[in-house]
Image 1: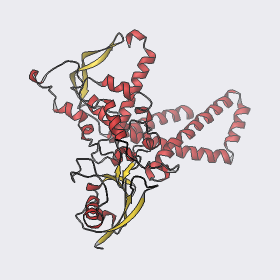
Image 2 (image 1 turned 90 degrees about the horizontal axis):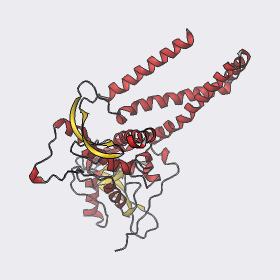
Image 3 (image 1 turned 180 degrees about the vertical axis):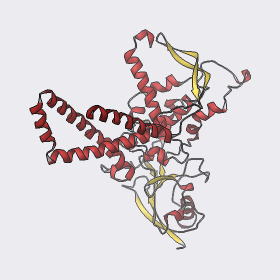
Image 4 (image 1 turned 180 degrees about the horizontal axis):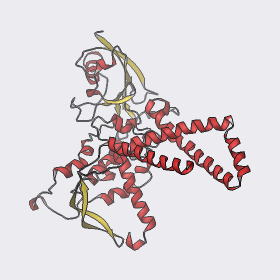
Length: 155
Length: 246
């Protein structure tokens, strides 16, 4: 029997504009460019500081120019989008177990001297923390780290 | 409320240069699903309309179609939710169309067995020797992923699968995770060998649309990200540890 004649549905180049969720996804991917920009910007600042006060002042004047300010505002918006979306996705990617979890004995394959062998081991089951707790704890962590850095810079 | 609603249905016959859209008028009954509308067309208007369906209760997974561009089980989507209409019914995206609303899912059928979605054991325990016991807690670990009905909505929603047909796809990885998390299974390594490849979990860029459209709340995107963590740990181990200790 020959394969049926089928019609292959084309994927439009603008597929990512078809749904709000697709647009948000592409924006999230794009945000990495702006995160990279911040890394470059910070490194330039560190180098400027290293070269002395005059160089630092020149860097600060350049950073205050309207073009750079606009770029940084846009970059900040994308960085926030990056942070918020990734924090929201974390509970999907990671199982964080809380106090309700329990250890059970299990047979799993483990590597011993390059070979996979079945071995009695212990795995943890149950007690999965709700998504809201995982997300909230990330924000707490972010605030704590930000507060520490602020203190470090301003003291 | 209007007593009828327009359905814009994709028609395609093998050999046609491209699909066309046919317009049908069907009764807008409050208790009708999109599938009932299609059945009305087939029974009373045009018997040549082709589409797949079976159980009408969201368990067989055969009536998946794009409704207004969103992958849906047509038996679980009310017609009147789209009132006053028209409502657009198309075949699932990312799959070749065989005829009208019927798509060719051969690609998935070929990919699914690659992840070995069954319990793998190395000890040859027979039925006579007894059953493998499992606690409710251990069942709970994988139960969510076992609810997959292979309806293909996740594949239709995944832009990566549309762009890179080699990607093994959401449902197959969710089912791999279902067996990996099963306390009776010993096949993690065999499945990881398949999924650690580029067209395995690394094809996914976490659009997350598969989870959003899943009618059984399986969360394939979650399964894929958890698998990435496993694959990354394995890669790191291979990179860092001396050969003997891996």
